[in-house]
Amino acid sequence: MATPVPAVRDVVTEARRLYEQSFGSSPEVVVCAPGRVNLIGEHTDYNDGFVLPMALALVTVVVGSPDPSQAVTVVTANKDVEEPRRVDFYLPNDGSTLSPGQPGWANYVKGVVQHYRASPLPGFKAVIASTVPLGGGLSSSASLEVAMYTFLQQLQPDDGDKVAKAVACQQAEHSHAGVPCGIMDQLVSVLGQEAHALLIDCRSMEATLVPLSDPSVVILITNSNVRHKLTGSEYPTRRKQCMEAAAILGKRSLRDATLQELEDARGRMDQVTYRRALHVIQEIQRTVQGAEALKRGLYEEFGKLMVDSHNSLRDLYEVSCRELDELVSAAMEVKGVYGSRMTGGGFGGCTVTLLQAHVVDRAILHMQRPWQNNKKKNTARHPTTVEASDP
Ligand code: ADP
Image (cartoon, rainbow, N blue to C red; front, side):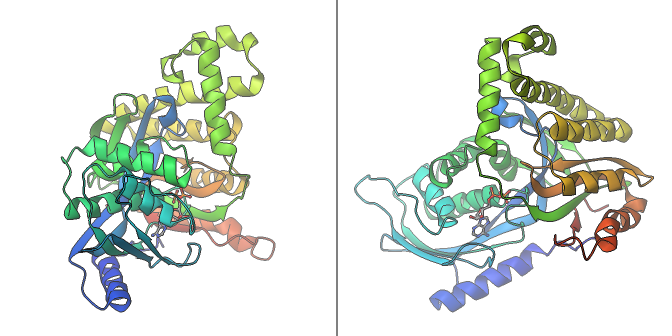
C-alpha cells in the first residue's frame, strides 16, 4: 500500500506547535512550497534543455513572525538534519554578505535572505516543517528555499516576479549551499499547479502546463531509501563534462547540438565525454516528445521514453545504482505499468513510475518483493511509495 501523503494542515499544526514551544507566541505568517518529481528530462536543466517535472503534495511549511530587531532565529522540525536544529544570526546592516557556515541546513535559509529581491528585511523568527524526504531527489532543498522566499515576501513584498523568485532561490543554493544546480527545482516549486506537469525550457525559462488529471493513470514515486555517499563531486563533474563537450562542438551548450554533430566530433573527444553528451542530447529530445505524448494521452509512448531515459542514465550518464535499477526492473515486470525510471540526480533516491490506476497495489507489492526475500542480506531500508497523482 502506498504511504499516504500527510495533509498540509497537519504539517502546519506541527510547525505551529514547535513555534509556540520555541518562542512562546503564535506565528503571524504561514506559507508552504511543494517538492517535485521529475517525470523525464534528467541532467538536462544545466544544459539549457527541457525538463518535465510536476509539483507534489509533499511540502515544506514555514511559519513565523517578523522581529523588530535585526535578529533571525530559525528552528527546523526535521530530525534528519545536522545538529543544532536551531540557528541564530543577525541580518547585516552594513551591506556585507551573510556568510554560509554551520549547520549546513541553515545555509539554504541564509542564501535566500541574501538573494531576496526587496529591502529592508526585518529580523524574524521562523519554524520549518516538511514532508519532503531529505536528499531523496524530490527537492526538499528547493521547496525549503521557495517556502522561505515566500515567507520573506510576507514580511517585505518584492515585485512578485515568479521567475525572478525562482532564480533568486537557485542563486541561494549556488552561493550558500555550494550546489551548482539548474533552475528546474525552484521553477516548478514556484510555478507548479495541481493536476499538471510543467514542461520547462531551461534556456528561456518558459514553462508550459501539461494537464495530468486522467483518473485511469497514476504516478507512483518509490523511495529506495538509499543514498550512496560518493565524494560529492559527481554532479559538478558531470556538469564540467557537458561543458567540455559543448566547447568541443563549438556550441554555447548541449541544447544547441544535434546527434549528427556529436557523431561527427566523436573522434575529437574522449569516450566518457561522448557518452555524457549523447545522453543529454537524446534526453532533451525525449523530454519534448514525452510532453507531447502526455498531452495526447499516449501513455505507452511516454512509458517507453521513461525506460529509455533510465537506461541512458544508467549506461551513458552513469548516475544510477543497483537499487534504482532493481526497482525499475521490478516495476516493468508488472502488467499495466507503462514506464519507470530513476528520478533526481541519481546514486539513490527515488524512482517514478507511470501505471494504470488499477494495478497500483500489485506494482507496489512486486517492487517490494526483492527486499522482502533478501531481508537478511540487505541492509538498506525497505523502499517506500507515495502516489504523486491521486486518481
Ligand atoms: P533534495 O533532493 O531533497 O533537495 P539535497 O541534498 O539537495 O536533497 O538537499 C537536502 C538538504 O536541504 C538537507 O540536507 C538540508 O540541509 C536541507 N533541507 C531540506 N529540507 C529541510 C528542512 N525541512 N529543514 C532543514 N533543512 C532542510
